[in-house]
Length: 167
Image (cartoon, rainbow, N blue to C red; front, side):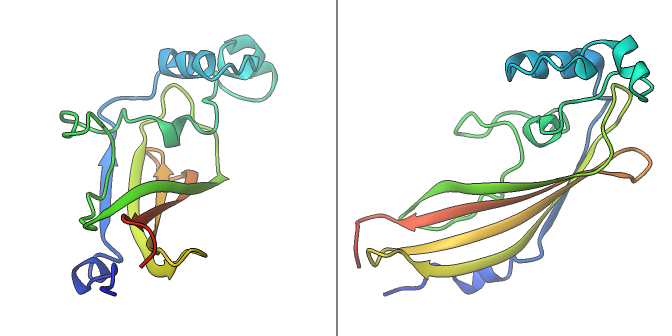
């Protein structure tokens, strides 16, 4: 069996990508996201309500930062995706999301300028219960504001599973 975790992939552990949004998050983005995910919490849409609850202005739903691509400049990739991707070359596999683990810091507001710092933290080769090789890639994204304060940490797992069944 040939290893999925090649020396070239192993060398990418620790690789980092940093993106800073070209403008503040904005009330409209916060409102649109809240509506899109069906969250009617008035902290996201009502400035007076947010102030009455100790905030200067509306705040963003916590997962907005991890789901937005507003910090990415450029054009969609060949798959039509506009956002961060490691573009890992793992031949004869298909990639699926293994999950996300969020840790929330301070809330983001409309004047927040977001910087996302992505790091590949680990790659591990394993075998499924059916004997199919898989490569588990873990990366961490840290989202900070223009003052360097932590807004969100997102640990993401991607699983590259070998095509062709059992080996």
